[in-house]
Length: 468
Image (cartoon, rainbow, N blue to C red; front, side, top):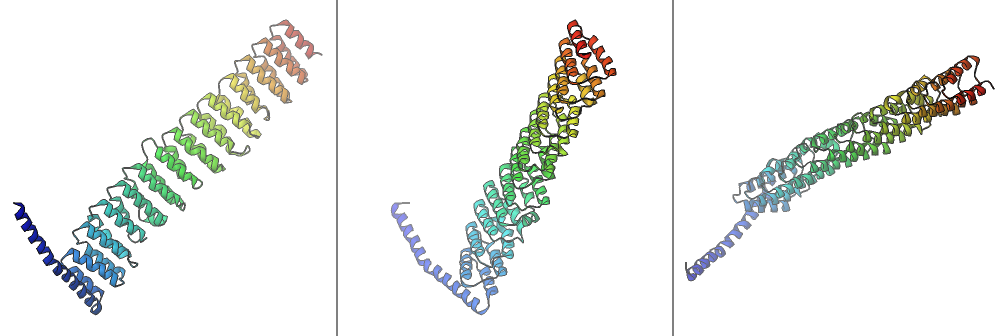
């Protein structure tokens, strides 16, 4: 085509547009005039039928816009207009019309239902998300379940996250639970976004125990492989109030001991009640690492009163640590408390099961016997010592602090005879004579102990002291 031919065709086309434009404008004016006449004479229902029968989508959109400006429509009539907009071929026209309808004060449950029935036909995710956002803003809970499902159907995670969080901010916890919000979160491919929504739900701070249980069950299903997201979420939950049974059950199921520690230590710090301590101690059974168990138990000891019955549970929990050095740390921490005789006696009884080195055993026994009574458990444990030094050290510490009865003195002398080092045996027997006067029957036993010494000068020194 030559340049001259092109210009001729272009001029003809322009002339056609200019020629037909007045007709189009005139047709639009005619339709608007006719709509107003029907509105005045027959009412809104007939106007809606008139709009519905109009062939061109652009004309229908214009008529709907003008009707919304002309009249105050009910929810029912607005819903009919929304159904009319469903027939629009263009997503843009449909969305613009939905937005105009949703801005109306009377747009309620019927409008919500009409738009929700069609919104999945809007192919553009951003446009669909914008309509869903306006539906959320209307705060209509009648079809909240359907609204949540349409949000879940969005293909862009960022849109889903924003809208789910907005529903959490807009609707009550009870409404969200009734509408089954949690089931829409379970299949999130992006776990982080799922937990963002759960965190927003917890922030509302008005969940009952059953709601929280359901939220935690969902969190477990959303959890990543290493438990980091779940751990962070549990910390958030614990910040909002005293944790309950389900909280500790979920915590126990976390694989990582480090994560368990990061959850349980702040809980003990913030809620050190006997019930909380008891639940934390129960969780320790599910902790594998001796170091992690020790950290938790040390904090539990910190927040537990010395006369509390839970102290007995803590003493027994030391047996689950499985590492001697860590067990000694917890025993030492417990012994710094002003314990009663029951707890001290229990430590003396249970400690040999968890501590095998004589040095560690003697340190614990010396500390425990500062305030406790001396009983058979004490003597049985000391008799098992293989170290003469440690055996003598423990026995002498008891002699320094306790007035022993006849039976205890006999046990003390007989155990002293088992000390293999002459020096340690002499020091112990000599300390006993300095502190106690012996009955005739005990003197006979003491003389046996003297005879067990190898060095003559030790024997002579003790004989003089005995018969002085």
